[in-house]
Image (cartoon, rainbow over the protein chains, first blue to last red):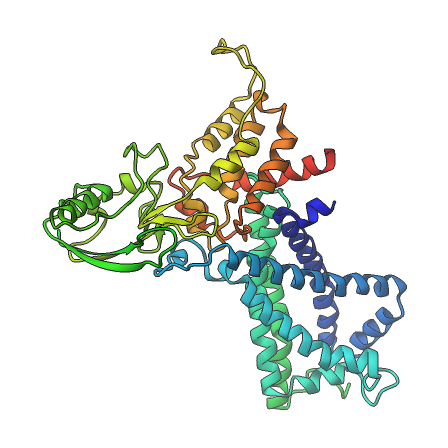
Length: 230
Length: 247
């Protein structure tokens, strides 16, 4: 097993498995976030968030989630540095732009930007909700209010919007790439992985983009998106 | 055609190299890229200069010796061709063409455009063979090999080991080459004896040689003169997983 994990293919496997697990998490995350649009003053979203905190299964999965993020980032850093060492002298003319897409060649860069956003995102929501308790049932405001307030800030809304667009492109390459790394690609199935990856990228991209865009513009226009006054 | 060439000149493995600009006149568009280099070298020799060292052998696109990075493209801009099969008609009159050697830690430059590709030989030596005696040519229906497998093995066996995949890959990964060799033998009955040890040993050697890891950008497949499919890399991964589980 050690031999496997130390090999290039073993490291790629870890990237693939953790990446796919993180995609699964995004499904759950998007679903919960969409409850913000239930028009009930954020009640469904707050209740869903609250029940997750008290669900043993979710708490266990949460540990694996953090582990997956750390492993995915750690392996990415290791692989990127190893890959850079594999070509100590660079080409004077770089022709890779003609043979591979920009996003497929810059997964490290897009990954780093997503990681930066995750850190900011955790600081904004996870820390006050789960650690300091300033947001949530015992805090001074609900999580849904906190979301609405955070997205009133144009800079945060912009960071959120740019990050989820980058995330969409990261997934568009990463999803099908994971199946290739896991040895599951062939002529029959690779179009399916590619289409599924692109569909997921569009769903996650537009889905998560809806929060900064709708919350920010509802704030600007004074539209009551959460329907507080119901 | 008039062409300006910027060629990487490097005396030997130890000394630092640099680009030298050459201007060539009246180049025939029907010349191959290597023939154009022959003309350049004739002129250099005539002037008493050192000719440009470059690898070449069959000049028919099947030996895998020629290896030039032309304007950032392995074997030049045309798909599915080696440098020797690339013709000057693929360029325009007055073009400036930058020619570099393959760049990879595992392919050190020996001189000018010549790189040491013995790392590929060492990978082959760890598993790119079969140890069973297969006798003389078999009767057509003697070995039941499905046509589909035979075709896939044949397509993988088309790899000429030129190293364009490594040169083109942003990570200098050799996975297209190694996977083609593993696939070719894993798909045929003769390759079954060493199937697991082959996958384990060739991947191990590939890692030890200092090649990078695949990030599935697809540059290798796009630049491969024999158009080896990325599907082989997925097969190599499968072969490796099965071998790890069994051995």
